[in-house]
Length: 407
Image (tube, rainbow, N blue to C red; front, top):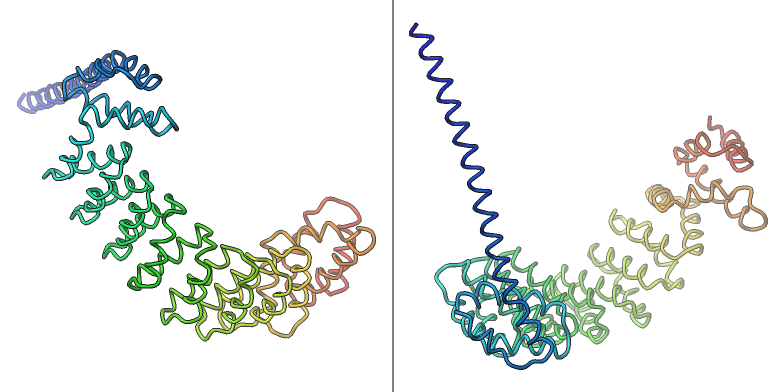
């Protein structure tokens, strides 16, 4: 009987807990639904007055009559949502409205709040409302002890996008936190051309970590005016990371006038610079640099060989023929790298389907397959010989493999 009573009690407790969980879940959902309905009801009342003001720019009295908490909770969000989409007079009207309703002053005060979520929220809205007087307080917030607040302030400055905002972001590229530095770099990318001048100053006078990031951003921005500074950093800099990043940035900018300097960088004593020089030459695509890239295919460092092979593959038929010449060379590592690049770029599969093509196209395809076979890298060719559709190309490939003693 005792055991039965205990079991019944346990069952009752479990049932009671389940009922309680159901009631709590239903209560939370009901509260959420009611809150959403309340929010939408207020939004519908405010939106017409806001839309009228966007069009005319006149008489915001209905919006000014709202209590401060409604301006903060509803109008701020409505302005932020629309200001992202609008340009011209509509955007100017919204920015002026934020000033008239006291929202800018309210959020400027919120930047000094003790609570981090209030500081972050204030920074977020100020980024939408813009204005020169907002930049300095947001720039000061980049030194906030909370990393999330710093990230929100950086995004707000990027949204404003003025040269002064870019200058504040550039100065924080040497932040001790790697995550913060990367976020600042990302936001400088978003700002675009206004960030170029502050970044050039960072490369010239900044600390090591900041200079490397600045070079990377300038490359991403394709900043042609940064070429002299990047050339100097590539050839004269003492920091290996900076020299490598400056070399890659010149490749991204893609000016053929930089080829001579990049050719010098291919003979650098440190391999990261040689590797990025190969990358850069591939981005520019000057076929006169093919002999240099072929030489880099025999470099002692794997990354240099990899980048040089990819650069050749990116140069079209001329680069492909250069890779085939590597296959006929004596350097074992260079041959393996050339084979891997031809396979990864789909070139091996393509030439396998061109073996029966007329004139020089078929001749080049057969020459390439012969070179791959002589290099001893027939794995993909054998797979192609098994899986290709029936036809002359497959028959020719099978015969070439059989002649070489490959099953």
